[in-house]
Structure formats: structure tokens, C-alpha cells
Image 1 (cartoon, rainbow, N blue to C red):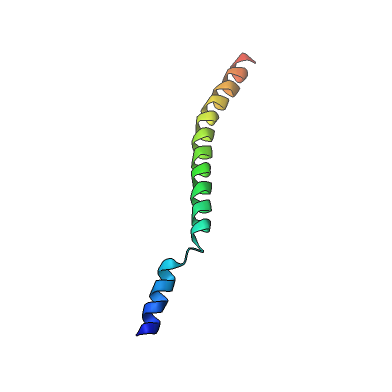
Image 2 (cartoon, helix red, strand yellow):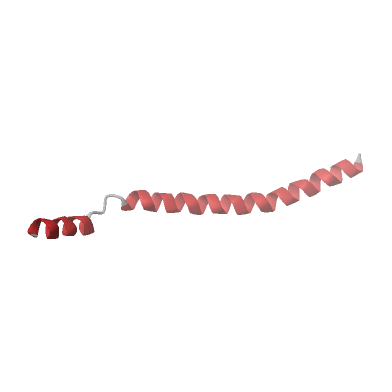
Length: 56
């Protein structure tokens, strides 16, 4: 019984995986920002190509 309590205490106090999770969340946030920026930029680029094509 004491070994089980000690195991549960050790699992609750273990913080070794937190850094990896934090880095993964930061990477996901950066990726989301890049996707939003690229979607906005793609419309502007398409308009420029269309205007150049119409000028020719």
C-alpha cells in the first residue's frame, strides 16, 4: 500500500514532460500564425498576377 502511495506521489511531482508540451504548443501557435498570414498573402499575390496578366 505504501509503495502505491509513493508511486502516485512520484507521478504527480514528475515534471519531465512539461517542457516538451510547452515547446509543442509554441510551435503549434507559430504554425497557426503562419497559415493565417499565408492565406491572406495568397489572395494578394493572386490579384497581382491577374492584373499583370490582364495588362499583357
